[in-house]
Image (cartoon, rainbow, N blue to C red; front, top):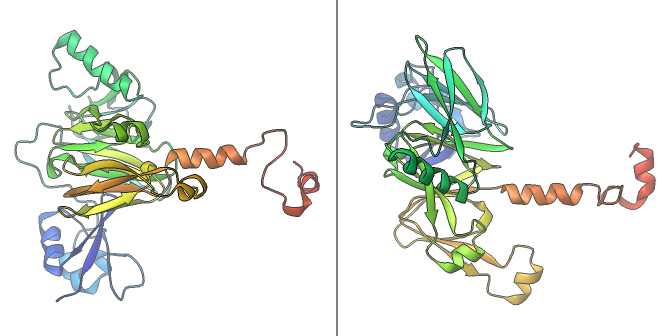
Length: 334
């Protein structure tokens, strides 16, 4: 058996893959010379161009555009993700191409970009006039999002750019719905932007237990279409491929997205003492394959809870100063 390799693609780990698969991906443009690889015996993730086994086939140095998908309805946009913990994504638009985003996510744009606020999910897939737009907006309201979305369109000659920033520390995932079966279920606040033509709707959880105790309630976001979608998750992101019948138990807040083929249920931790004093909550999510799931290491709720506990409650800091207590606050100026 040959060496097993891992690739860093779209913000998450892919693999194990063989050397032949990596060479094939290089040939068809799915990955490029800057894609990071890792295998047993290597000390760190290394660009393809610097790995001896693939140096001959890694002639390019820039980001490679994904191969066109036959019959794609959504706009075919190109992109590049910058940063490590506080990331942003830059979208490259050809003339008349558009990208849709949540209100307030834009970071910068070049002069050829035209910005328009629209009512509803802005998918542009024929929502049926005013009533269709109202229905789309109502769905977004149920997920806790704004009634409006913003469409950024290249109205100028040549390629123009627009960038969108993550709302807090974490990773941006680049997901091609055309390669994921055309549909993805994700947590309510993870959507950042997408190619025009992607529909952003709602997904009701059918099980009462999931709705009451699942952290995300009865409603999650449903992304449908065949275009690129960019989602944000807190901390590090870990993608897992679950085999048929394979089960994974995770903290309810750590679930970012899953394919519809993955069964999602809620399970009690089992022991009363563990439930009340273990600090991990009363329930965890049970995910059953087949399908792909994406997990985050730092849910926003966990981050907000730690910030709240560290904030001054009565005019003085809590959990700081060690044995010095108030004297420590006086010494350091607080």
